[in-house]
Length: 288
View 1: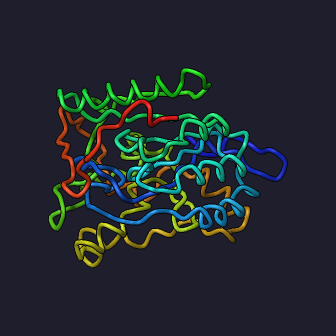
View 2 (view 1 turned 90 degrees about the vertical axis):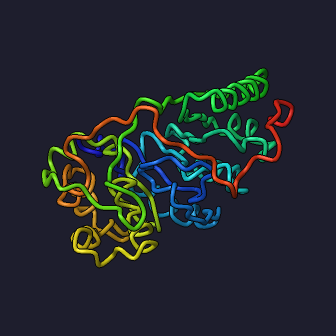
View 3 (view 1 turned 45 degrees about the horizontal axis):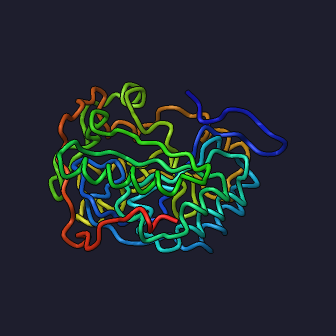
């Protein structure tokens, strides 16, 4: 399955592209493929996204462009980022993926989504009574905001669609040893999730943000990880030949770090991070 779908003028059409608008996340989900459970910080500045897209929008057009994280609503500039994405890729299906906890921080969100024809997806990570009560509040808030809008809302249930792409946690974190790149790639839920990170294109989230977690836990030189630290993303000045090659390549040797036979996690462990405790309950009237 190639990421390359075709060509439109001088631009290549890709299946999808994602960008972290925030590394921050208020939740800590065991085995997060974006490593957001390891308390990374940092928000994407609007001018930085504009610079990146000014280059890539002239070369590629993703069928789907998703603003993700981390948790996107922890970036105070989210509405500006949505508008920038719409300006550069007006014909792409654009989506903000959020856990919904901080929608109330963006009073103009519904209006911005409607103006830019951007949809929002709420990721559902657990089925505990407390968590489901939160999802009900989000549903009520978005329904209130949608009364006079055309915003498209999706709820993505991640409760039964979860597996771990590495062994153990923290300093004990290790890659899988299945050593079957093709099988790992075929089993990978992230193979359609090309990332735009640091201005470059990366194959998937586990690869794009791997250096962050390996550096955090001083694992860059660990013998089990050393072979996976040499991955080279595609830079902005890559040749057209290299761009086509990147988009059409399926498995790579780095895919060996992930499981060839992933085990689905039922009732995954999820924690509310103490540094992001909710002080106010999101209210429908704050949504627009």
